[in-house]
Length: 96
Image (cartoon, rainbow, N blue to C red; front, side, top):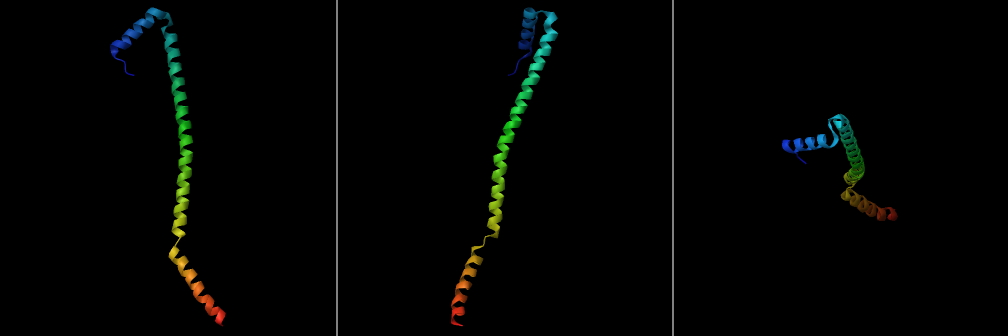
């Protein structure tokens, strides 16, 4: 929300008329304190959201890496060769 200079001046004049010049410092302090609390609360919410969204993403990344590692070790040609050789050698062993 953007306020122009004229709008801010109008708000300042309204505050002075409603509350008087003596209460302006206290109002400014309270307003600043409220803004700081709101910013802190928003930052806390952002941090919690980032933590919650980061955990599943990290877990998914770890699982993807596990699958990649398993795929590197998997070589169906070698497995087929091993089975073929075992079956080929098995009848020869029986004949002896």
